[in-house]
Length: 378
Image (cartoon, rainbow, N blue to C red; front, side):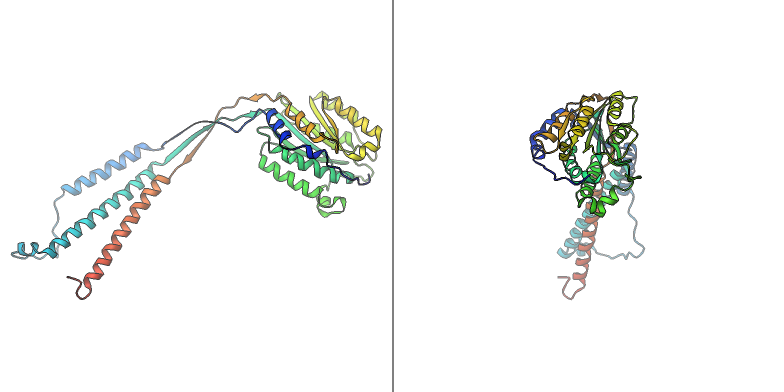
């Protein structure tokens, strides 16, 4: 269980070319837009309010004007009305009134549009895939650096997935499900980043590692049980009644302490029984124990999976390619329909109208103040 020196030369091969191979093997693509439509939720309300406003305008135009109670009758007013100053004030009053009326109509139009609720209806096709991938990591002390490297690469792999579900389980003497199978990739990347930081923070001597792996060891005499870890990961797959492609990325050094429930061979048999393909990534130090390496490889190969020694050229890339080649049958689902309110037009119209009214009132106030000043009547 001693700490080993990690070689990452093999990981350098996992560049854009490998990710491209993965993307090619993943049939899922960004969900295409089936169609969209924009309209009013309550068009009858818009029509009704428009009719009401129109009726009020007609009545206002036809209604006989009322004489103000403070009005004073003046004889021979025709001479006053012929004055240039009177005509200028009358024109100004008409212009201000017209501008205020126009601004009010625009504001009312915006309010009517808001009342009718402009909505955009979008139908998006759901391109779901029946492929599940469980990342299964040996959390014993000798695997800390290896796990950090595997997590780093797997986090990059997730960026190329679309529609697949991903989960993470860590184990030593006991298995802990960090997160179940999910296609929420933002959540997945956050959790993988968190795990990478915990395993790469300084190994077994760091508080981050101790807190993250707490619960994986109940009996210090039973640790790094590859068979139990693999069996636990196989049992993490749900929806067993569905025909889904299932794969495990298993990282370990196969250096068990004590005796577990499952040996490696029987755990691999359980994976075969449940149609789970296991891709193994062995720690570099495993090569120093040929029997352990051979046992690990034979178990993984029996599930039709790949086996790589981390540090060999193409080790991680081989896992990427194998995952991409898993059969993924599209799942037919009805389009996802989303209805969103689009109040921008109504808000804009109402804002322009209210702004226009404020501007008219401001201009009218400024003109009134100028008229009160000495000489302002010229």
